Length: 488
Image (tube, rainbow, N blue to C red; front, side):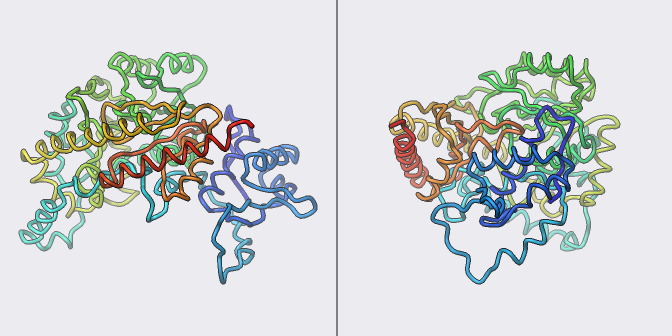
């Protein structure tokens, strides 16, 4: 089993090995009951000492991922109450472990939960709050007006008319001026992150993220072989003073930030820190990737601070914005806004990735974005989501066990809960799943040494009655969990 190790990382090889294998076990790439390579074989294939492998395996056993059987080897531990797998011999596929891959992690796949669960893990908007009927009519109208559109590829950069409409949208809602030539249409924000990574990030390059941060972004950076260094957040967002100190000894290439209604914590980077971050980028020559997915979803009639891109006059900021979640997830429409040669290099990567996003779904958004319908939709959406946020906060205040704390978000879709330090939300998730509830454990949101006593719940997806019941049930699960881990 060949894995990619970063020998320049601040993280020890022991922890790297343990974390990579733990992620593969959680993902299911290493199946329950399957045997890991012998320590000697693993040592030889990855050119690390036998002692290092032994300590990594021991750490995995301590954390409950594997069991070491003297004279037999290391085996992926089976979960309790797992349904038996019939007509399948796992051993038949063990030979596949000898094929090296370059996938370091994909924690995002764990955020969905079982198909029939109460998905507090899903940071997506309930379909009933989306303008699906209108957009369906627009797609039909586009086809009626020009049926040949389905036989054409769209431009690599994106349809010109769509980019013109989005240019005006960004000026109205995101407080900065741009040109259509500086906009690239992407298949959601996720593709924008991937384009930045494949263009500018290679093995050993330093990427700075917040701690915690968006799970799927970490997946992209880790799979590019980046050295990820995390900066903690507080009530004002990323602590830029820590980043400033780091820049004295390290040379970051990219800083990835979610400054507005941060995912997963919901915090907002203050205007002062936005200015500080931009000045650090200018002094140290790194790129800022501003993931601005939820700028328009603010509560309590309090507008967020100006986007970092609106403060940028030197091309240090790559701005990413998605339209899918707030309009139509299946459309997968987002934009990447950049300047100078950075823009041209991103466009080259886009051509290598997919030769252009689907044209039909781009065209369908034009009437919506260019009319007052978008403004009306956003106003209604803010009201509906604010009501949901308030409902969940009230339920937590009433039912959550003593010692559980949370951040009240001023926008976005998520609430970040913190358990007492003895709590472990990986363990809690297994118990919650028995009650058909899923949430995002904090371990998925850290690049290096994860914290285990936090979790993200999303109030945007479930129907109102199901949302209320799932929060009450989750609080009951937490109460029982605290009782079980309480020292006797």
